[in-house]
Structures are given as C-alpha cells and as structure tokens.
Image (cartoon, rainbow, N blue to C red; front, side, top):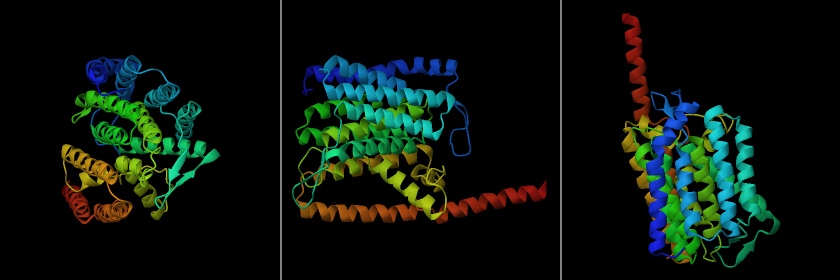
Length: 361
C-alpha cells in the first residue's frame, strides 16, 4: 500500500470503525454477559464489559480488504488474527483454561506460518545471515505465541495495551518503510489506526475493555508484522529491532518470569508485580502510570529507529547503555520481586491504620 490518497482513507476507515461501533459492541457484550468483574489483581472497582477487541479487528480487517490485494501472507494474517480473536472472545465470556488458550494461540500462529508468515533467517551482527531452515517454523510459532502473551500481560490498566499497540505499530511502520517494506508499513499503520480508534472508549475511566479478544489479536498481529517486516533486513540489528519496538510487553514478561523463579513460584502464577502494578504502588495515579509507560514505549521505539542509522559499533554501545538503564530501573521499581521502599512504607502504614481501627472497634 503506497502512501497515497487511498491509503489515507484506509487509515481513516480503520480508525472510524472502532470509534463508531464500540458503543454497540459494549451493549452486545452486556447482553452476552461478557463482563470483567473486579478482583484481587484488578484495579477497576465495578464490572466493565469486554469484547472491545472486536471493534479493533473489524476496523483493521475492513480497511485491509478494501485497500490491499489479498496476497497469501495477508490472507494468513487475517485468518490467523480471526482465530486469535475468536479464542479471546470465548475466553472473555467463558474463561478458558490456560492450556486451551495456549492451544488457540498456537493454532493462530500455525495458520500464519501455513500462509508464509515465517522468520526465515536471523542476521549475524558480525556479518552474514544465519538461515533457520526447518527451525523457521517453530521459531516463528514461538515468537508469535510469546508476543501474544506479552501483550496480554500488559493489558492491566485502562488504555495501556491499546496505547502500547498504537506506539508499537507506528514504530513498525516507520522502520519497515525505511527498510523497504511498504506493504508491512501500510498494514502497521492500519493496525495502529484501529487501536487508536478504540482508545477513546478504553482510556481511564474505561467504558469497555479489549480483554483477551483484543490483546490476543493485537499481540498476534504485532508479532506477525514484525516477523515479515523487520527480520528480512540484512542490517546488523534486524533481530533486535522487534525486541526494542515491543520492549514494554517483552521485558515485562521476562521480568515476571525471573521474579517468579526467584520467589520459587510457577512462572504462570499470576501476581501484582508487573510494571503497571509497581507504578501504582509507588503512588502514581492510573493515568500517570499509563502515560509514563507510553513515554517508555516511545523511548524504546525511538531507539529502534535510531539503531537503523548507526554503525555496528555505535549500535552495540547504545544497546549496552539502554539495557543497563532498563535493568537498573527494573530493580529500583521492584520488578524482580524486591518491594520498593516507598511501596513498602505505604503498605506498612495502611496495615498500621487498619490495626489501629481494629483495636479501637
């Protein structure tokens, strides 16, 4: 899809459909009983309808079908995205088991791979390419499933996953276009536009959640687009680009795994140790936490764009400094499991307050 008048209208369509249809989808979710109820790990205090991801899917799919030829890869993206969305819609209503959700995610990835969405090689930073051969299939499936789950993990605050998707998709578009992949850039623009159209309904205080239907669809699409648009380049850091662009969900997922292992718990055990939880514990408001994560996402995306213009030596220095800063910040906030001092003081103060109330009652 070239950057022309038709492309602009396609982006407007992708933005407008979720913007206009989401209120109707909200009513549909209420009628169907697809409602997310408050819980121990959740920050909302009242039931909120789900299925917001349906609007994102409809906006993206309609814009793609009306503006692009239906190539084999695009067909794979749309069919795989439909599988991911359907699994999410079912889970939002009836709560599938973790293994059933994983099976659905693998099925979506397999559909994409069957239509040619694969990571065929990785670049050796010191020169040349490393062909994956038959390993390209399991590597691609693993990548898509991992990113799908990573996006799902950051969907913990109003507007967080949708905003991260907008920024990540925009960065994929910029980098892909610069690397000579205009088709992938166009698809990323439409994905970002559809996520942006949903955001007004989902930003705090949210009137509807995207839940698993949205996060699984967005995770699948972002993983697939990065696989076909960012790993084909022969530049030294082509493998690093998608990791930086999707840095917020990827690092949050990796820190969660490390944290749970250090605490002797199963890596799939849910907790309140994710970045958005820690920021709330530090005293940030809901909106402040979301906006700060947006800013970090923009920083990582900007680093990915900058990396495409640097020499190998300059890129290695930048990556070392960036990774060091991420690890130090993660430790300070408490993402490895150690409770941050201000959060600990707040918790102890609350406990003391409740104990005094109990003594006086």
